[in-house]
Length: 335
Ligand code: FES
Image 1 (spheres, rainbow, N blue to C red):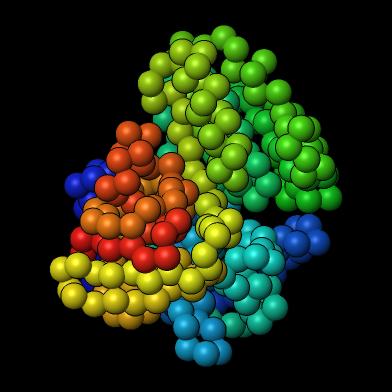
Image 2 (image 1 turned 45 degrees about the vertical axis):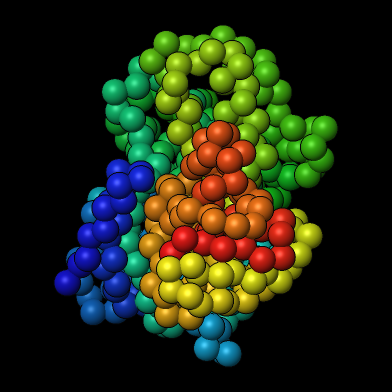
């Protein structure tokens, strides 16, 4: 039976339905990105989803450690027999994407949770501007497909290192309703897209959707605020990372439980809590939804989320442990 969790912090609904799904096809989209097609292992009709939704895929490593990785659904929502996800092989990640690339082939069974949608299209918007960085193209692609199906013209800005590293680009370009602009930045910060010009003049009623690295999202959010786009004009979903912390090993005290755990990167604090059986509350695991947000009673959080306000971050009293870390070697959470 499905469990529905409602977060008072984020007004978000998460379904914890778990399904066994079989990999029925794999396709290389680029040298580092693989498309997986999944069908119900029990030949069930799959749950409905809309553009922007994601599923979580369980990865259990040979040492027994377990993680759930979130992947946007890029297939046709009308096809209730198939889920499609695109997995980029992340060399620095927790290892889930490497496992899906190297160890999973046609016929394998995966445990899948969801779908959940924290990044939906706003069909009341007067126009839609879609911005993607790298593998952040996946929800943006499904949004573009949905808008094209509805015969709604829209603009897509797709930034990636180079065209070889730009999955789904040709599919995006095949729609006559999508005005697609590809920008190759070579991975160089000083070659980023000119968002100052793009966002110079607010467009009444337009929605901006951004998915990609935090630096890209921060840039779009910062410029749109400075240029006085109306509040809420920007919707985003990020693929966070915690790999720049000075201390790769962190001692986490759980005040209410009088317990202490040690977390070592690349594992996140949320994943470590789950591994130790503390059943933490979480949703996106990307720092977007705030479902995992907790109070901090001592220590110095290093924020990597997009959910907390600047004031909340500066106060040091809260953190989203799915992506954030600590500048101090010990931190105490009020859980
Ligand atoms: S789970 Fe969504 S912000 Fe942490």
